[in-house]
Length: 105
Image (cartoon, rainbow, N blue to C red; front, side, top):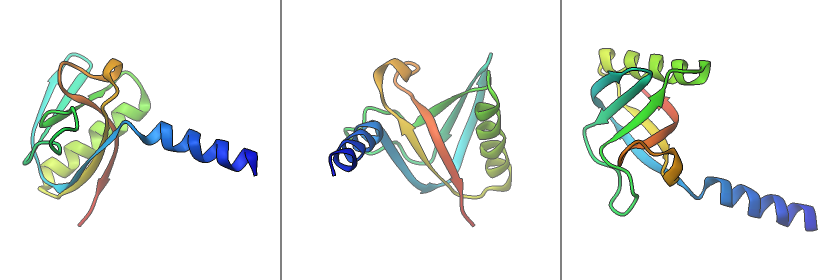
């Protein structure tokens, strides 16, 4: 039982810094070196600490996959839902780091 409670607390703490951008279309993609800024129709929820964009690094396979999926959704005009990490050390200016992206049709 103690292990279950510890796991539950750890999981909650790990997800506490995630901000959801509900289903919406990507309105812009900007590449600056190895960073990609993805802009949305609407800003992040008020009080979330994120602006209207999220950023992705293309320095690893995970980041390149996220960028590829975002670019495909942008060119196809398909809505996406994303979660972004608003942990201060992971931010680029006021923009939160992209945690995951879901394409829905």
